[in-house]
Amino acid sequence: MTFTNQLKDNNTAEFSTLLKIEGAEAEHHEIRAETLASVLAGLQKLVYLLATAESGQELGERLKPSKAMRESCSLLCGVPQAGSYAVPLDLGLHQQMDLAPSPLLERIEQIWSALACQDQNQLKQLLPATIAQKALREIQKFLPKEHEGLRLGFQGRSSTTPAFLTSKTSRFIADYLAPKTSEDAVMTVTGELQRIDFAAHQLTILYPPTRREIVCTYLAEIEENIIESRKEPIQVTGRFVLDDTGNPIKLMDVTRVEPIDLSPVLINEVEAVNVRFKQPLELSPSLDDDSQQYLCITEPNIGLLVFALNRELLFAEIQEQLAMLWQEYARAADQTLDADAKIIQANLLNLVEAADAKA
Image (cartoon, rainbow, N blue to C red; front, side, top):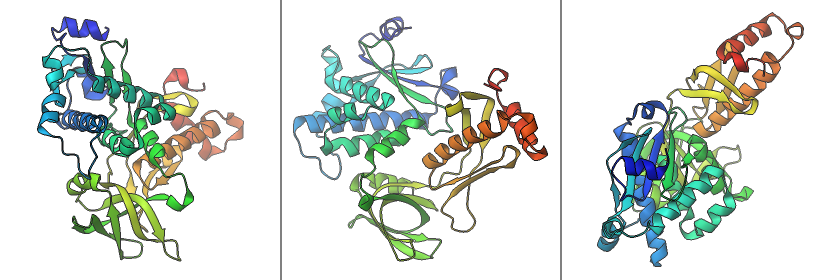
């Protein structure tokens, strides 16, 4: 069903934009309240950011929309619709005055499409350097996690299909925002939160490998994340300074602070070799015993052993390892494998859809 027909059929034709959530529970036309609230709150902040930039106002450390901006740029949500879970959207006074589709929502749709296509050049045109990092980090906050199995669509009235963002988009944004010089190398460390100095924009963590405290200077816009992520242990991502032994002693320009996520990683397919599993492959990560820095997954039945500093890197490593295992075991001739290798081959073949078994 096209966007226009969906709005018309549901008697909400006055709305200019549709937010669609697909996958997992959304296929039953329902969504977790926490997920919906996160996406809508993030979209609202994105609208305010774009409106502030277009008005020529200077962006402070924290976004503080004026009363007039709140009235004209507040998102209005229509009655949720099936398909899979769809929310009609428009902006405050703009929608009340029955004007053409909001330029701000059209801009967000263009940003959404550029992210879906991973088009860096288009992103640079749509997001000036003054707001690019703030805007993309806001989007990154509400993107689905890989284990949630969701994707977020955004569609204007003139578009025939929505553009969709998934957990893969978060990895693209991380690469897009990563400094391009070795002097600005970025790393993620895991530690126990000791204290926060809000006035100095600093937090202190205890780094398990050395049992030393590390002072981390964070960007003001992530302060809300720090408050929400004060569980232990936490992961901190930013530019780093190393000591003579290669351990971090200082973190600057911290861009992410979040509690360590040890929830299962669900893998539906191995992208590089076009293989889909009969049921999502559920892999449970844990922290390594020695340094407490690496997320590790061991699945001896299929020969999988991976580790990475954060979940984005872990997911990429899982995909790479599974593609390698598929090539070396599932596609190998039986006579080239020893007894142990044949067990791994059989276990891999049993996990995938029959049509893909030796594709």
